Amino acid sequence: PGASAIDDPILNVYINEERRFAFIEFKTMEMTSACMAFDDINVLGRGKVKVKRPNDYNPALAPDMNPNALPRFDLSKLGIVSSSVPDGPDKVFIGGLHYHLTDDQVLELLSAFGQVKAFNLVKTDPSATTNKGYAFVQYADSNVTPIAIMGLNGMDLGGGKTISAKGA
Image (cartoon, rainbow, N blue to C red; front, side, top):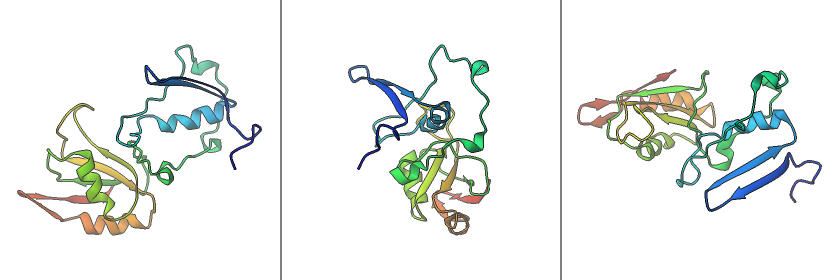
């Protein structure tokens, strides 16, 4: 059963399929702010979602909100890997990667230890075909973090490359 009209956080939706964009109006500022977490996620390998405020949005006029009161979305439960890895005890630095490895290749290696919640292979710019040799990852289950660090640190990638993994 879906959400009732009372539970639905959305007031209005406009979709332009031809130009591939949509406008969504939420009932509350808190839900709107929480949905900013969907920015820059890759949906089924078909492209990244861009989530923005309206052009006329003025943060100075917005009411103050307690960041801890905002709804939190665990995108990993939807099978979506966020490209923004938050600072914290579960953020892992992965160094010593080959520069030619793609996001999918590194993600496949990291996923061997558990479901990945957030991942960022650092590049000079988003359209670059090569990376800078390091990435950040966060696992959906924080119990996986020390196991992944232990398993990845010192792993031989061949070609003189050895992975360095540590808490970031």
